[in-house]
Amino acid sequence: MKYWSEVAKRSTPYVPGEQLNDPAIIKLNTNENPYPPSPNVQEAIKQEMNQALHLYPSPTVDSLRQSIAKQEGTEKESVFVGNGSDEVLAFAFMGLFSPTRTIRFPAITYSFYPVYANLFQIPYEEVPLTNNFTLDEKAFFHTKGGVILPNPNAPTSIFTSLEKLEEIIQHNPDNVVIIDEAYIDFAPESAIALTHKYEQLLIVKTFSKSRSLAGLRVGYAIGHPNLIGALTRIKDSFNSYTIDRLAIVGAKAAMEDAAYLKETTRKIIQTRKWTQEQMEKRDFHVLPSATNFLFVQHPDYNGEQLYERLKAKKILIRHFRKSGIENYMRITIGTDEMMQQFLLVLDEIMQNT
Ligand code: PMP
Image (tube, rainbow, N blue to C red; front, side, top):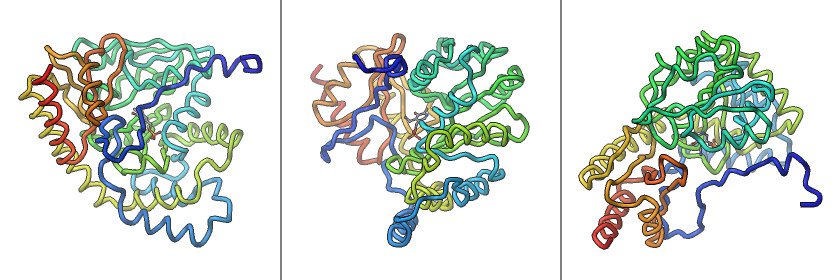
C-alpha cells in the first residue's frame, strides 16, 4: 500500500458477476442477451476493420450520436456516448453531482452507484424501498444534491411509472435527476420524452442488454445540451477517444436495425413470462419483472445454497449477500432452451435438498 494514492485507497471496487470461459456453462448471471447482435453489426465492423483501423476515431462521435438522436426523437447535441453505460454513469457522477451536496438513490439498486459516490467523494443517502420492493417516490423529493435510480430497478426488476418519476423530477428543480434505463426496452415505456420538458433530467441507456452488444462496450446519455456539455468536458479532460472505431460503427448498425431489436426483445419477454409461470408453479415468489431477468425467492430453500448448487452443475445465476435480499436469486432470461435446462437442473437440486 506504500505508493497508493488517497483516491486508490478510497475506492471500493464493484464486484461484477463471474465471467467464466467454459462453453458448457449456461450463463444467466449478468443479464446479457442470449441472442447475437443484428447481422448488420458484423458487416459494419468488418468494413471498418478493412478500411480505417489505422486512423483515430472521431472524438465527437457525430455519426453515432446522430443515429441515436434520430431513433430517440432528439437532437445530436442532446446525446453523449461512452464506453459502456458504466463509463457514462461515472462521468455523470463526476460532472453532475457535487462533493458538498448529498444525493439519494434506492437502498437496493445497481451496486455501482455507491462505488462511484465513494470514489468521487459524493455524500449519499440510501432510500429504503417499500415492503414489496417498489419505489417510494416521495422519499426522493427535495434532495440537496440530486437523484440517481434505475428504471426498471435492478436487481429487483420492478418498473416505476413515468407519473411517479415526473413527480420526483418536479420536486428536484435545481438538482440533476439521472434515470438509468439499462433495461427499458423490456419495460412499458421510456422517460426520454421528458428530457424535452425538464433540463435537469438525464437518461442513461446501454447497448449491452436489448441490443446484444455487452462485449462492444457502448452506452449513452440523453439530456439537455447543458448536461451533455458537462459530460463532454469530463470526457475531453480524460480521454477524448473513449469510443473506438469498431464500437462506433457496430453500435450505429445496431441502433438502426429497429426490426431486429423488436423481434429479439419480443422473444425475451415471451420467455420471461413462461419462466415466471414455471417458477411460480414451483412455489417461487417472483417480483413483477419489466427487465430481461427475474428476481425470485423460495420460502423453503436458501437462495445462496441454490446458487451454489446450480453453479456446481454449470448454471450461473446471481446471488447478492446484501441485507434484505439475501434469500433472493437474480436469473437472466436466456433462450427457451437455456431456461428449460435451467429448470431441469433446478428441479433435480430441489428434489435432492
Ligand atoms: N446500469 C444498470 C442498472 C445495470 O444493471 C448495468 C449492467 N450491469 C449497467 C448500468 C452497465 O451496463 P454497461 O456498462 O454494460 O452499459
